[in-house]
Image (cartoon, rainbow, N blue to C red; front, side):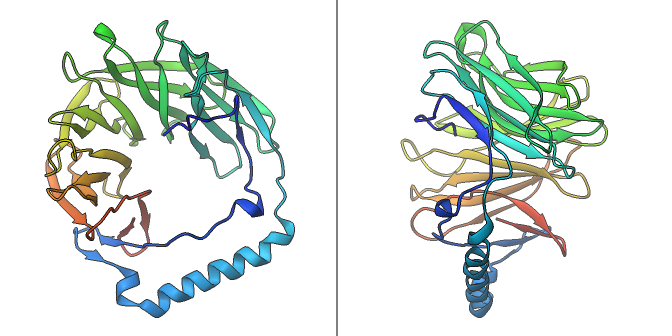
Amino acid sequence: MVNPIASRSFENRKVAPEEITMKSITELNIKQTGSIRSSAARAPWLFALVIALFLLGTTLVRADFSPLWISRVPAGTSLGAGTAGIHVDPDGVSYVTGTVGSSSVNDIKTTSFAPDGSTRWTHTYDSGKTGDQAHGIARGPGNLLYVVGNTPGPNDFAQVLILIYDATNGTLLNTIKYSSGPGRSEAGYGIVGDAAGNIYIVGTTVGDGPDVMTVKFNSAGVAQWRKVYDGTGTPPLDLDSPVKILLDPAGNVLSCITGYTASGHPDYVVVKYAPANGAVLWQVNWGVPGGDFPADLMETARDRLQL
């Protein structure tokens, strides 16, 4: 989510030592079959060791943790201005996207930096209306760069926006706009592509409250299927939201979601979809009484997912 108190520029930089804090660590291992193993629960000593090593490592790097470079991108005066996502290639080339503009008009600016922090290219997307917003960024196959967010559609309801760039020079190659129906405000928050050029996004839609949709587009940008996750919560405690989308090694689609339960509490939710037709292969929910908010989803060795 864009920081509403953003400064008038967003920047790509290393973190200063005083910004490092330890609040909590919760590790949730999910087998690709959908079964759950919590490493903290099955091995308390291992969990404690991880924390100890983290604290030791933090102490060791404090003495030499100065930034190699800092680069800034002017973001304008809008209270909604700020970064929405960053991607770094193995060679050190980085890409950052965010929302920029004045208090009345928002645009999407995407910038690429060389490994030394110099600007390689920058591009601003302006639909001609206020309300353009970036929410996510990812590299795709064939030297493509994806940016996902939303832009005003018919009657100014938000619709999903996908921008496809040449990662080398920033040329805008394609613009995809998608709405599942009239009178719905929808946005993309995560994006991933496969080797065939198909694109998958996870984002928000509207049902009995905020719901989460996963949509597949073919290489021509045409929607192939759309699946909606609607938790068991009831309004006003029905605030399902997207977190991240991944493809597993077999090409199956994994959507990570904050899903609200009938008790009104949020849970970790991961849904695995078949890429061909969006059929649900499995769904996993995890939570304890209170509030459980997943922040990230990643694949690890031994056919595991970690939340």
